[in-house]
Image 1: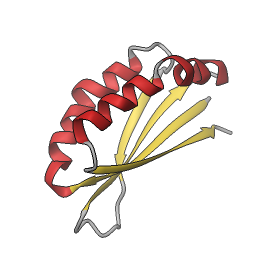
Image 2 (image 1 turned 90 degrees about the horizontal axis):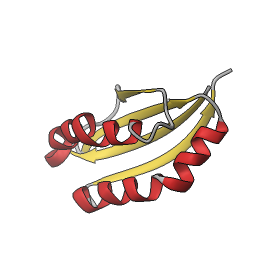
Image 3 (image 1 turned 120 degrees about the vertical axis):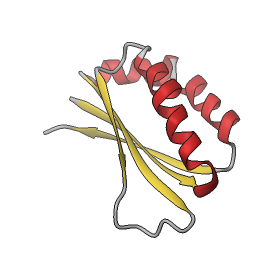
Length: 100
């Protein structure tokens, strides 16, 4: 199993709206690509939340070919939507993990 992990630090002022939008719009759009079998969204604990909250959004896919399909055909457009909506109110980095 391959896990595509997106870690996001979201500013306090937009964090509730961002979380709702992620759950209601963005995550369903990512799953609708057919590249992933499920996802989880988690909030980092034991951090200084004075300037925002940090989340880990994880998408699981069966193999690298599904991930590569997502990356090549869907990722840029979906990432562009997030950037257009929330601009500089968040910082994200992505990592790829293999379940062992």
